[in-house]
Image 1: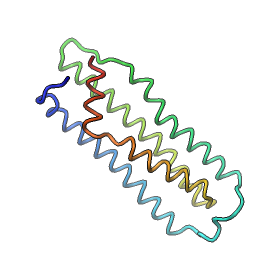
Image 2: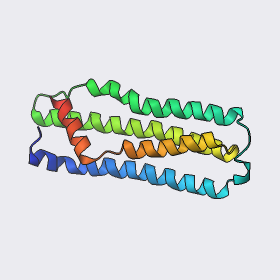
Image 3: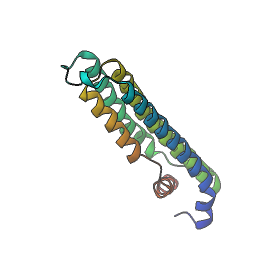
Image 4: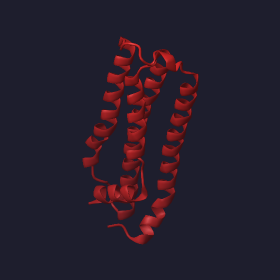
Length: 154
């Protein structure tokens, strides 16, 4: 269990990670809004072609790997001689885990936004929506971040 002083020292790292995550969410939302404004919504009932299908498969694989792949690193424990070095090691590994997750989900989202510009289909809209919900689900709240650091130290 981290002390109050150690949790206070973690706040700058948590805030910077939350700022990065927030910027990725805002950029994705703005890009989706622009594409939604320029899309020709009359074509939404067209039959499913290969491009939305490939985008959906790629999107689901990337979102799934964004959720599962960083769990491979979750079993790693913090290294260091002192408790301070162990905390720094744990903070670094947890931060990298969050950034990898967000990068994979954002790759899926932007790929499907590109597919949405080229071929509007409800499957692609579903993947974009699923990626946005995944962003919110994976957001690095302070309590989740601190508990992840504590698990790595033990």
